[in-house]
Image (tube, rainbow, N blue to C red):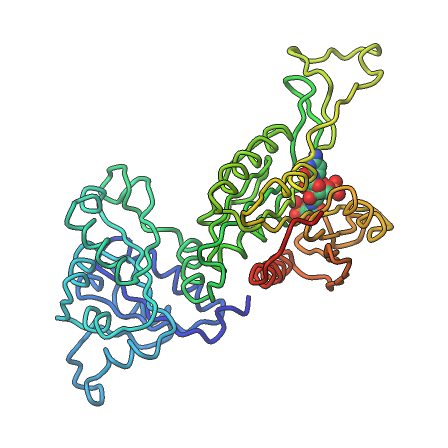
Length: 418
Ligand code: PMT
């Protein structure tokens, strides 16, 4: 929550219908404690009046490069220097073309030319304008100069057509904006995560599963993405949105999760592009020995018992595969341990059966910890036998702190845990 407090944002609004949607962006940034100064092009004021921007941002609107009321007439330089981040939304085809060619004929473009800090562009326009080679080449030029892009997204456009050209959602712009400002110690690193439950089908209508919501794993994925990592997220059936920018691989059963994880492990350990594996998924240890093709009929005979069969154990298999990675980068492997009482003792036993670099223990019978809830209280058991107990925190905070701990481990050489 505190991230946006006292952050200074300059929002450059281009002349497109999506200018109306930037009012929600201003509101959201302000709610979270940021200060927002709006710079609008002349065309932007055809869609939203300066008075509206002023009322929503609570600050004067900036639109005139030659405003005689401003002391020294250096508004474009001051705005360019003082902002932590400049967001351009909507970044129209015209604005992108002017930026790519260094034009500075109005306040918005002059300010952008004078800007040396981070700039995020959220384009919005008709799909043909977006895919036009001129626009695409301007985007390539601007990307090469370090401008970050967010969207546009696919969907129905203001012109009534369908295609890629919609302004990204406020949540997405906020998330990418945050990543422009966060330190990026994990740039070039690749994390593989599992999250959520698995479902083991009994018949076409019934399955065995557990209460995992995916929140813990998704929070770690989000934290890794914010720190600059590339993230592959293999997840079971969940009802929460995927973290922006993660490569998601949705699966249903434990065997599908196992196959997806092993495929990424084999491919990316072979070319040394896997740095950390974090297994937060609550994988079903067993599945029904038979999946009936027809719904099992309700009768006393069939209510007897379900024969179970063991599922593959992903963590165990990864721990066994590590010593085969001779002369290669060994990815850091972190498991989770969901316990109900005697947590540390049981986790130590788990660590000896499935050796890994770290086990993150949570007692799922404890209030505010484990399945579904927004918080978690975890204890870290390192393979060196060191134990760290963390207080109750939000899963977002646990994710952030765990990623910081992994980042620090990655900066030291480590070895198979056997
Ligand atoms: O998703 P949430 O609602 O946010 O809840 C989070 C959580 C409680 C699911 C999470 O914090 C957690 O504890 N995940 C691990 C759950 C679990 O299956 O624990 P376990 O002690 O049974 O397994 C130990 C480790 O082996 C885990 O890393 C697990 O992913 C892994 N495992 C287990 C079985 C199996 N067949 N293959 C595995 O890889």
